[in-house]
Length: 212
Image (cartoon, rainbow, N blue to C red; front, side, top):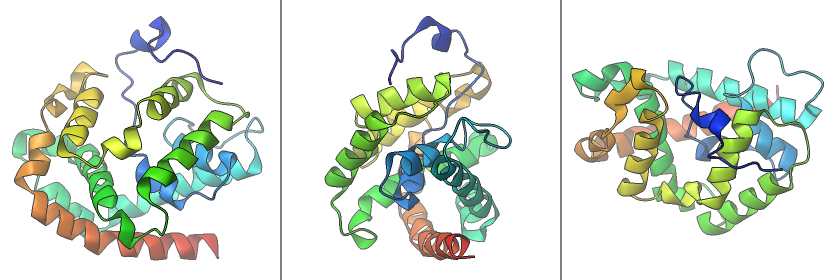
């Protein structure tokens, strides 16, 4: 499935930053390759998913987008964004999304009976076993996600800082993101509190979304 992440075609597209806040989306996917891949493709597939994707992958794409919309509207998430420094406020959504994945890692045992290490291994096996259509850019990103164990790297502040720095390098327009791990350090307790307030609401939203 996977092509080399560092291919020339990908590196020659500096104005297309890729998303990095994958853990929460994967948490809500079902335990299948199509669902897990769909949960990641919401940012890579524009418009209505076409017939190249299975029904389960399409469901994952739509759920990803619904989660993003709910998150953007949530008042606690807005409080988190307001904590970001003035020079990075424009990119507060990116920073907060990625920092929330850190707090999901740190509080993982409150939300899952499966150890994060085991969950990550299961996810990587699913993604590597996916045999459906995959957009080129998504292929490159998921290659690196699985080989570099991004999901578990979110547990550390240094891992989150590396994630934010990688995003910053994708386009000159958001180079203020470089070094933005300091936003996590400076607001750590408040962001953790916000996440612990927000995530149960997200769980309830997803449950209602899936049973409507």
